[in-house]
Image 1 (cartoon, helix red, strand yellow):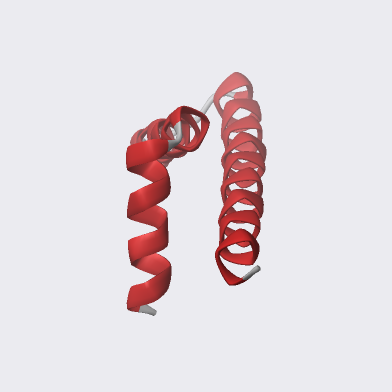
Image 2: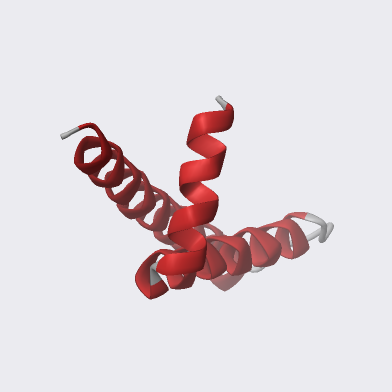
Length: 76
């Protein structure tokens, strides 16, 4: 597992797109936490939660693809 963490840290340090995706993922998560902490949500807020979950998943999928690609390049 440490190898994966080291690879992720290297990507974050060296790859602007990966760093941007990681920052976006964190921003989406922070907004989700804030919205979920409210007692009552409007219809727009429920829609935003759904949108944030999708955006967060897209960012995660793209980051994972980059990790797989970097791992494959390292082993080639």
